[in-house]
Image (cartoon, rainbow, N blue to C red):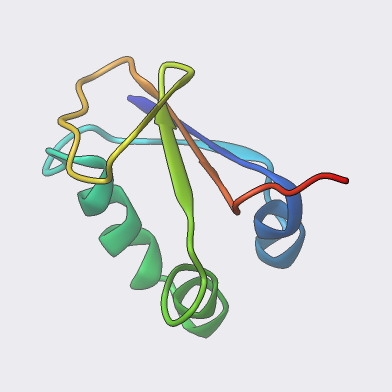
Length: 83
């Protein structure tokens, strides 16, 4: 299983903070995002277009093409700004 965590407006728009996905067929963080997009319009809107989503695997920022493995934690969140 891969634990997925959603943060900030992403969590709010999807109505979920975390979930677990079966590892089968998932090789990269991009594969996870592609799978999530297939869930429907709300999910597709959250991950496509101008929506830039950052990815962290096991609490380290990374590119979407990072290889993930069973037991990893993948965090998805919008860019954060402060002031």
